Length: 355
Figure 1: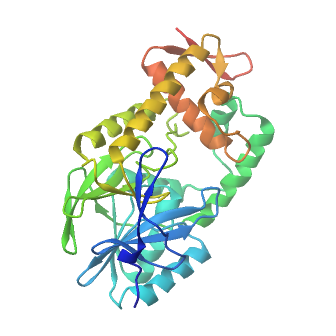
Figure 2 (figure 1 turned 120 degrees about the vertical axis):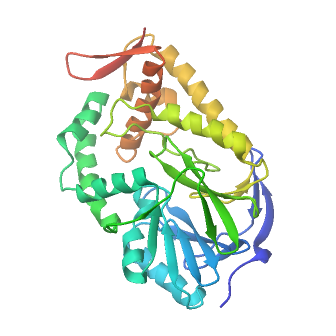
Figure 3 (figure 1 turned 180 degrees about the horizontal axis):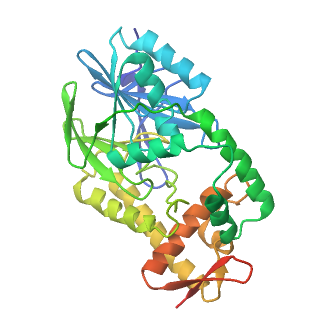
């Protein structure tokens, strides 16, 4: 068995001051060692965000996998290749899903069922996932469609959203009917190393991150990404939530305990050093957007009206769902802060204006 290891060490500096210690990314079906007993896997995704990083942790008598990729035939084939080529005949003992999004737990049920692993998640993410998967139907709920219609989404884009909604079920396998719970500040021994569970909020309800002090490594999931920002969006099941508040609070929490020199293993993009720099960028970016948004809402604005203020990229039918969710999160934050008030126009569209 051959695994890529220390020869992969690089020394790249990003434009924002982040340090990228690895020169090469894993090829499909390859493991790259990033630290003692910690391996990087990169799986393709059939969406615009075209990859996800997964992490394989070695134990004396088996392996723990952190996140799984989507339930596609290609990803299953690549996992089978990795298992045959790299895992030395040792079993997959545990699967940790950082959170409920399908690129992270899409194959959790398949891995548990086919390889006898145990699933580990936070309770909220597991239960939310079970409900979501069990209730996936051919048509989106009426309340879901109305959420986007009230935001100002046009009917043509709503029709395309319905088509995408119907396709979701193919990307996730059924979850096991039992799991082991992970909670904030819990310690978990995996192989020769002790990992601490740290819960983040905002991107998803109870997102699991893992930090290992002895290795100085932080498995961040989607909480800290090097080049893009995780979607901080209002979910249609809780339209008046305030996830941006939760996200910013989690950013402050991470700043308080993370070693500035920790190596961050993100779910998208490359491993990097510079967690504090990146977190402060997130906070500053959101604060700037909130200020601009409040000024823009001197006149009544719909959610769709705010896109040019919040997003640099063009919003189209392919990304309008995420844009609506994220714009609503910013507007809800200002409503909770008492800066904006929401009202409903005669055509049923919700607008926001400075109080």
